[in-house]
Image 1 (spheres, each protein chain N blue to C red):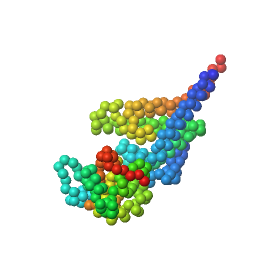
Image 2: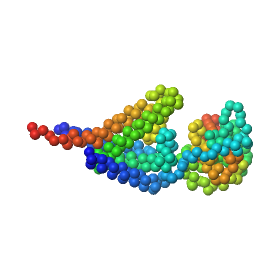
Image 3: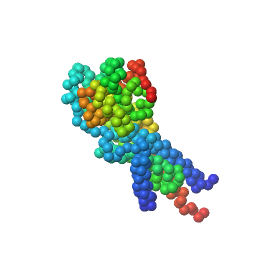
Image 4: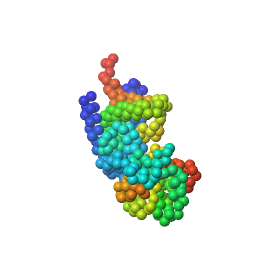
Length: 156
Length: 180
């Protein structure tokens, strides 16, 4: 198998994995919007009430929508790009919440556990941040990885 | 890159519209304009007069509702007045949690979906002499939110108490649970 075909398969697998992750996590949140609302509130970042409500109401479906685009391969690069930006925001918010909890409780950073509202229940902060970095890398690969495979080949 | 940005903006707009539509159509959807966590005026002055403070434990919640310990909750549960509707237990959890098990005879009132049971529960709360609101216990604040809702429906603050231990303590103390 040549390099380009191999890279295309890798991109396809990455796209499907990313899409599946967002569909699953988005669906978990969409099935319990009140639960997600309560968790989003704990971050104390979304004010006033209508902003909190809008994020809690819309974000889960937005994730599912982008996940479907990734699975179907339609505007997949842009979907991965958008989710990458969202992941940066989520990761910063989780780090912020972890920092405030650490200030309040004195618990060591990597010993902190809380439900970040990500759809996976209570998580260890360090593991969650690493997971998000991994997803971000995957999103970046899907968004920009195809550019390398479309680069002009040497004439030799 | 410009095309990517254009597509990204398009997807964001489309995604937001899809999200708004899905929320509007979903039976579990949220009301965007509602303040689900109002910071209402505390009712401390009215509540504390009928529930004298003790030295160590707080007797009122942050919204000023009277808090009761397990012993008082168990006493009210055993009181024959409960059988006649003069003592009412209200479960502030959602339908799924309620179905998993609730204090026997308790009515459900979900702060986030008040329309589901308000018609029945408010009437009973107005008639009752004592209304005990509970949720999971611990850091669960839904019982406070429901107590505030009931105040808004005209249930006097003097009647309302919050069982702060909630279902978790009720179960831990070996008390019975009922399933629908």
